[in-house]
Image 1 (cartoon, rainbow, N blue to C red):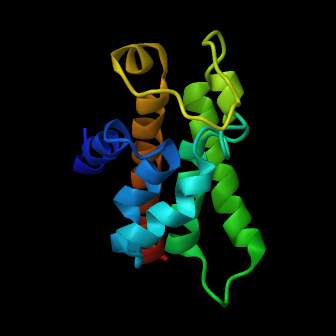
Image 2: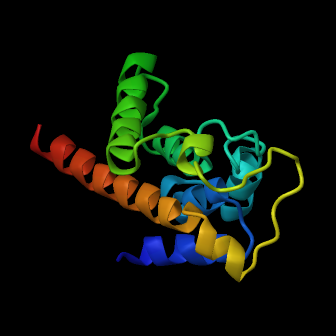
Length: 152
């Protein structure tokens, strides 16, 4: 398990949402300070504002991809290809990128008040494992992309 995976899990356990935990471990190497990263990603936890839509870990991964790969010169097509590949990898591993589907079978509310973080929360929910998966997927993608760009 990488240092980034461990750090992301610690961020999540310390109260940051899933999206913040993922973006937070990549932000500085991608040119963004931690405080800005957690502010930008704050609305994406719980499947975007706790509406159980696209998983916050996936949103965090997509934000990191924007920082890593988007330039003023490249077009949307290349960025969308990257996002779709990251989504595919996450979906292949977890069956979905939708928070409600990932939490299937777990009592889950869309009320704006976050669930208390306690031992029961962590035992029932896959969120910390999804944080780890998103970080691992993005780390792998980053290394592949860098390798590809050095060989072309």
